[in-house]
Each structure stands twice: as structure tokens, then as C-alpha cells.
Image (cartoon, rainbow, N blue to C red; front, side, top):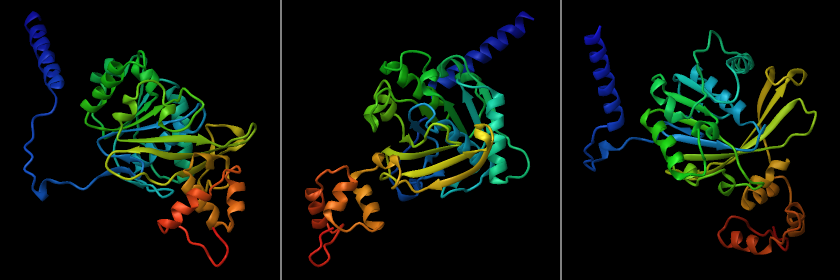
Amino acid sequence: INEWSDIMEQLCESVLSDFRTGSPEMLLTGEVEDLEQQDWLIYPIIEKDNPTLIFGVGSAGKSIFAQLCAVLVDAGHNFGGLEVIKGNVLYLDWETTHRDLLARITSIRNVLELEGKSHIWYKRMSTGIEDGIEEIKEVVAIVIDSMGAALGNDASEQKVVTGAFSAIRSLSVTALVIDHPNKAETGLKALFGSTYKSLLSRHVWEVLKDQQVGDNLTKFALFHRKANNTGLFKEMGWQFTFKDNRLSDIERITSKEISKTAMKDGQTQYDQVMNLLATGAKTLPEINSYMDNKNMATRMSEWKGKGYVVSVGDRRP
């Protein structure tokens, strides 16, 4: 028995040593065949083999969108303009229970009319992700819900954030990380804690919601705030409609145009004006009124000089 104990101890030490050593060195020759096309798990949201961060206030729609992503990847199902690659998914959960997640996943699959059974793995988490990393199964993608709890410590400390992202990186998987803001602001400056959350994420999306008390639906939009190897993608609007106001019983999932909703404030000025022009606005006073009476004359002149807009006759855009 003692001999087997020694063998198992040596084996565990060897595995941990390999794990901590990281990936082996690779030779980069600089030849074209070494280059790989950029791959996506869900285009244009989640790039393969890298962390993507989605953040927003509570009940904005972050988790339900992450659950939709998990279902789409598990089924290899394209939906709502999202192009999906099939893969194994593990949902790491610090916030709810497997029953809640099962109800949501079942409801989403019913709306999408998917056949057969899902194969999404679930793990209830109580410690920081660094502590539980050695127990995680080998999968294609993981969902981390949410980053604040996954850090298991002070999210404002650089070493805590970098340690968590290093743990994620060591898995060699695609990660969708859910996080919360700490300010009543939009954009990357609203992210809670260390700026390394943004720096170490391949893509960062902000979720803004447009919902009234008593609504039996959740309306939200995703705004692309940061990218490493691509330009920023256009915002995406979504609406989840529930039966009898039960969040576990989804009746319909649709993509939405956001230009006429409160979520438009998350758009850049350029996108807001382009949407306004596309819906019939022609004069500068009309544009100023829509833009909360901001004087857009200077910006419009800049865009005209770049050929983005034109004046028609005596009427200026």
C-alpha cells in the first residue's frame, strides 16, 4: 500500500509539474504556411482559444446570452446572425444552481427547436478559479459566470486578475467570461477592478439593457468595446420574451434594431447619426434634436470631408 501511495504521489507531482511548465516552445519560421486564418467559436462574438469578456449591470442579459451561446456551441447551430462551430461546453457557475441552468437551457433549446439532448457540462463553483482549475475537464469552451466570484479575492489587485487569466489560458480553451461594472458609466472605464481584465481579454463586449418594470421580456444590446486583431464590430440587439414573466420559460428569442431604443446611447455618435439618416432625417436641426440637442455641425463637416455624408442641393445633412 505504501509503495502505491508513493507511486501516486510521484505521478501527481509529475502532472502538476507539466501543468505549471506550460506549453512547449514553437519555432516561428516566418513563412506564409505558418499563418493560420483567424478562427471563431461564435462569429463575431467569441474568438477560438482566447478569453472574451462580456460585462454589464445586473439583470442586463449577460447570463442568458451566455446560456444561449452555450446552447448554440453545444448544438453547432447558427442563429440570429451568429456563425457557430460545434464543441463541448462547460459552464462554471458561482451564482445559481444546476436546476436553474437546466431550465434555461431546456427552454432555449425548445425555442430553437433543437432535437435530441444537450451535452453541456455543469460545475458548481465555490472557490476561485485558480483553486479549482485542476479539476476542470478537457473541453472546447468554458463559460465563467461570473468573474468577480471566480477571482476569489480582491478584483482590483493586478496579481489576482492576471493569475485568474493565466489559469484560464493554461486550459487551452475558448472562454466566455461574464463580469459586472462598478460605475454608472459605459465603455471600458466602467469595468470593475483592474484594467488587466480588459488587457488580457481578446474581445470585450458591454451589455446595455432597455427594460421597463413589469415587462415580460428582456431587451439588451452588446457593444464591442475592445478587440485585438480585428476592428470593432457593429452592436447587436437582442430580445428574450418570457411566458407569464417566468425567466426560466422563454417563449421567443429575436435580434433587434436598437436605433430607436434607449440603448442607442451606447452607440458611437457616427452610428447614431447614420441610423438617423437611414430612417429619413435630412436637416442639421433634426439631427441635433435626436442627439439631445448637441450641436453636431462640426462633426458633420468632418464626416462630409471624409466622404461619409454628402449635402444634397441647399439642404445639409
